[in-house]
Length: 251
Image (cartoon, rainbow, N blue to C red; front, side, top):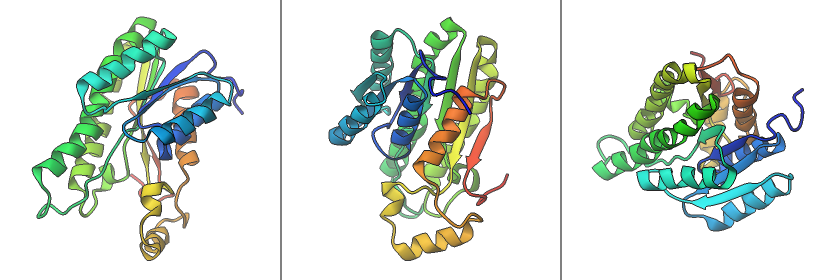
């Protein structure tokens, strides 16, 4: 078992870290001793709640509002973290949205919004954080994709494209940054018990769980533990997609 302060002295950014999987990741990093910068887009109350929980663990938390789909915002968030802590060691690109529609009904705006936040936002944050990591010759980047980025899903062509793009982007990133002591990996969650999934009708959730070999949804905390493994213990793993889906998809 890792020491409680195994990430002490490290600084992490978690985009979309105010709730759901992002919140669980931010808290798990804090439990391991990291100082955490949490970004949120619109829900100030949730962000303040998360920041309070992180600080209660005895580490520092920087709470920042911004839209990672806007390059200026993404770069400002990274710059503010460096100004506060003097470094960035860990970048978790978790911020993401859905605009589910079949291709027959999908609008240009539906497509562009999802690609802008999920894929472009990941690129903007990596590009902004990378120089600090290269300078230190150390960095851990984990991009949150989805099982949908590997399997596709009815009515989610925009979301699947964004998450599949993240997986391919991360492989190229891993190749380019290895010489600088930086690893880049993906966690691809399956169906997880977040607010978004919890809002689905019970009969739909029952059908989903029946298809999962482990017969249940994942918890956000299980995703967080996978992320922390990659940033804390996986020094010789890079360009890898860690599937956390209860056996629903086995590549």
